[in-house]
Length: 410
Image (cartoon, rainbow, N blue to C red):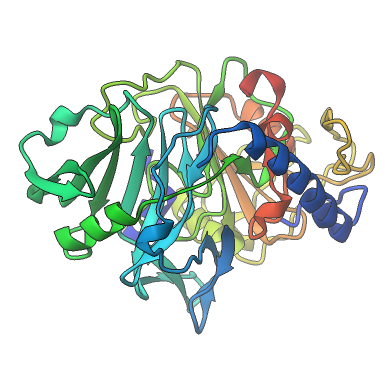
């Protein structure tokens, strides 16, 4: 099934109201997160995300804005003790910015690498375009025993501090050991990072406070058997390119193997369910592609009323089904329980593709649920109805996995 970015580039949440106000939600999230992170860091191995925006009409992204790192401030990289945690921290060296992690799995963390003012211009579908930040290089830091170094055995030897790495010219790839049987890899599209650039980035890689990974939503339902495999700001199969996505999680029914890897996993060969969050303009541009124009026949929701009308795009007005309220078990002390009378936007599906969407209540974002193997639309509709978005641009409002996911998926 084509990825959203592939579809768009080929072609040229305010969430349902909560019982508390948005201000209460943000303030409460920041307070709880500060307490949790302080406790988490104290017991974990020693290892800042800020909002950044490109000038003019550039979509803001949650990326790192870190100063250059002097040699004296660099410390050895250590990997998190938990399956979904971060120790990698963003940094800048010689004008090359490495973000905080944007994707994490039990076997590795990944960050974008961006030189200077890399941007991409995307068609909004309404006669205007959007300029967004872009990156064409990725840093992957593997847990010990996960990466197979024989993959780069034929590369040129390169000194990275006191270690010997390998540079593979044909793949524009640098790999080096940062610890016993623990490797990090930089891959770049041709013409973006030179070997010397990669060496500087590798030598400056540093550790940060060990901290738990978070998601910009909470969800109450997943079909039976799915467990979290990867998560972050962007999908594990599209880290490079335009930076548009505002949240991603991939769930699989089969455990994925994290040993002897030649590169990151993308779920292409697994029974996967993926959740993605996009700004409304980006999601609506896709609708005209996946639904095939005004002749598309949408799936029907439980109310037996078509929940999508192609002719309304991009001026879609979401429908509501106030009678539906998913079960929701807030974490102890949480102030983010949904209101008993909240109205949920009705999801809509692409017939026969195991691919469904819904708008957030304020229409600012589109949430997508899709599977690689056939799954009834009713299942994906239930997933979307039980998913509540925080503020995708404010990580302090995001939830740790114990709060973000239904019990069996954690």
